[in-house]
Amino acid sequence: MSFKIISTSDETNSSPTLPIPPLAPGPVQDTRHRGLHDLRISVTDRCNFRCPYCMPRSVFDESYRFLPHEELLTFEEIVRVAKLFHTHGTEKIRLTGGEPLLRHGIETLVEMLATALPKADLTLTTNGSLLKAKARALKAAGLNRVTVSLDSLDDATFRAMNDANFPAARVLEAIDEAAAAGLAPVKINMVVKRGINDAHVIDMARHFKGSGHIVRFIEYMDVGATNGWRMDDVVPSAEIVRRIREVFPAEPANPNYTGEVAKRWRYLDGTGEFGVISSVTEAFCSSCTRARLSTDGTLYTCLFAQKGYALKPLLREGKSDEEISNAIASIWQHRADNYSEQRTADTARQRKVEMSYIGG
Ligand code: SAM
Ligand code: SF4
Ligand code: SF4
Image 1 (spheres, rainbow, N blue to C red):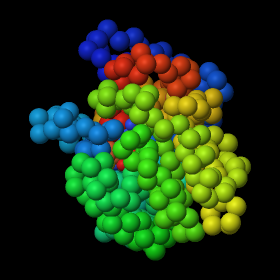
Image 2: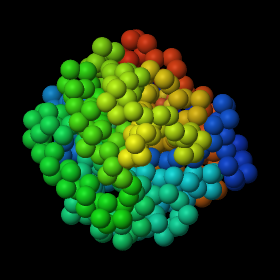
Image 3: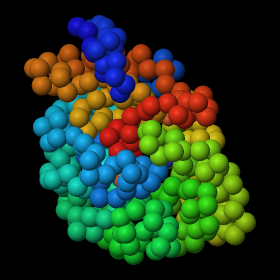
Image 4: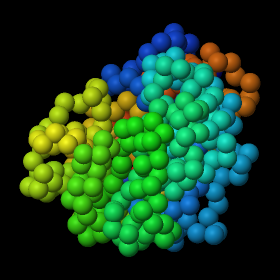
């Protein structure tokens, strides 16, 4: 069996193929002994926000060609892939996008995954715009937790950062509803961009201190090829931690598990914790155990990948579970990704797949 690598560039037809030797089922490791513990599944490449760091409106406008419905993996196909990943050691599954709550019937997918993989940790990342209405159904369907993105509590800043004029108060209501529904603790993602929302870091920390929710401050990354990323716009996590600790004393806390991406900080007054995700200034490639399944069923082994592996043809051409399982294992065993360890201004300009498609 051989396997076609599809490319995000135009040389698709000249892409190499990856041989798939027979492999035993069971946990797999890549070339750096990293397991395959997490799978992020992008269930739609569409979104009702236009955050400039992710889907700038100038690119994702009326003429942008989103994937047609028939190109999307069906729920049955997603569940089949997730089960095969599980046999290779994947214990955490995150639904994302695009905006995952825009995918019609998302509660049904959650229920199908929860039924097929009762021991998996099933989570979802959302912009919160549709969460208030869906939180209880998602919990009832078997979702364990949610992460909600919220870049500022200052309404004008937030409306500008989502570029959809969506109010911050509605996201806060959704966070409360998610917690009330039992999707707790809620994690809150704030992407920090210098000069845009970095002045609101302390407000964000203050607001969620003592709430039981956990804010994670994320360094602005050079994902995709459309956000015009510049290092000058990145606020290093060390600076964020320093600023917060000046106001709210905090100490480092141990990771909850090996490979946890966020570095945890615990407030000394016992009011909880916050986290920082430092993909740019402190690469964590050495412990990166995440695979990503794009909306149309392409497997990517790095957020900054330029190439992926098309699983959809295997799913739709009648390949057996064993053959697809072998393919997944072989792809992972060949993996050597370490983009963030090597990031330069030049690599930042490379043409990479968009985050909304690959799954953030
Ligand atoms: N639409 C959902 C949301 O916003 O939560 C899920 C998909 S979004 C791509 C997943 C996460 O990626 C969000 O927390 C978002 O803030 C983050 N993200 C998007 N672009 C980013 C960038 N350039 N740098 C850092 N984080 C980014
Ligand atoms: Fe949409 Fe999430 Fe990207 Fe913002 S970060 S544009 S909400 S997918
Ligand atoms: Fe993982 Fe790629 Fe990010 Fe490194 S750059 S941590 S390999 S996703």
